[in-house]
Amino acid sequence: MQEFDLAIRGGTVVTAADTMRAEIGIRDGRIVSVAERVGPAARSIDAGGLLVLPGGIDSHVHIAQASGPDVVMADDFASATRAAAAGGNTCVMPFALQPRGRSLREAVTAYRALAEGQCHVDVAIHMIVSDPNPAVLGQELPALVAEGYTSFKVFMTYDDLVLNDRQILDVFDLARRLGARAMVHAEGYDAIRYMTERLERAGTKAPYGHALSRPEVVEREAAHRAIAHAELVDLPIVIVHVSGREAMEQVAWARARGLKIHAETCPQYLTLTAEDLKGLGDDGMEGARYVCSPPPRDAESQAAIWRGIETGVFEVVSSDHCPFRYADAKGKRNPRAKESFRWIPNGIPGIETRLPILFSEGVSTGRISLNRFVALTATNHARLYGLYPRKGSIGPGFDADLTLWDPNRRETIRQERLHHGADYTPWEGFTVTGWPVMTILRGRVIAEEGRITGEPDWGRVIDRAVPGAGT
Ligand code: DUC
Ligand code: ZN
Ligand code: ZN
Image (cartoon, rainbow, N blue to C red; front, top):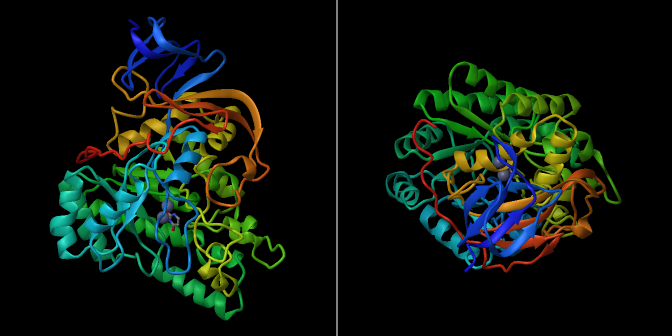
């Protein structure tokens, strides 16, 4: 009788706290033992020369999210989670979006149904609250949080999503009472409209207009306002996809005042700039490949974001994977997008490339330690969103979600190697040092050397605990 179903031997195990030569014994999908030697197992995997990391958790992705009548997102759950697995991730967190005027409960039920049986990795669902009416605040949200949907995002921009200040305060107040986690898209609606109309009047239509319409001050103002509301209500919040120095300084300022403000950034804000949106190509639309919100900034902002990562302002790096096809009339080059940048769908693919880019630019360059990499890509996501101590680290009792990582492997990112539904990657030709070799979900190998070895019903839709008031 074997003691374990699976043993990982010969690797260097890395957690947010420790780096050690150890073997891992796995039984029934869970880690049972981490020790210098573990006993006999039905299968042993040789991780010699490799790092053994907690599986990546990407707590900010968009999958199969309705994007308006004429635009379709490029990924369903099968393709997005396939790409996640190949990129070293074992859990992703997409959003069930409440269309305004409709029930949040119905949106969550329908979204969960889309995911069930279609996932290569585990999925935990956040909500987007676009209409905090009395039924949502009084019944739906409290019930959904109690059922394990313990986090939601609010938007400070977009016609069909924006909440006004009073609505934000009401939703924050409820989140505090429920112990739920609130995430904020911090860009100011009126400022963006003003800038967009001004640019259009001046004849600016091309994709680069997107960056001009959302300068850093727009993000800085909204971040400050969200922080002020969070202070008033006494709610810890997460400011997601912080793109540049100015919004980041607001987070650092809030922390210095003793406020619990969490912050997320993404690989695009470390590696892309607004200059990328200037590309024209055959029909002037090339730059649309890089249109996301907030937009990428400049080299100075990239350096500032790195400082924020190094000094702990940022606790999580997510992909904000939000894929649209480029050569597609329902994607980046839909007919209206050619009339004005304002109709280019906002978002870029990145679920499969997040870990290699951050490892390469962060760990391989010596900017951050291996342990910090693990914290930024797995452990802190689990802690922030109520998945800890089930996921996010390596130790007895954790799910056996692991990524075997070759720290020395040099690879070039190419669209043809990726598994997402998009038809391009913003990082085409980008060379990285460090690459996922094998991804293991609850003790089963789901991806190996870029091949998907699992099935689309191996991932589960999982419920979560409330992160807890005050955290
Ligand atoms: N916000 C996101 O979080 N993702 C894509 C677009 C957006 O505005
Ligand atoms: Zn957003
Ligand atoms: Zn997003």
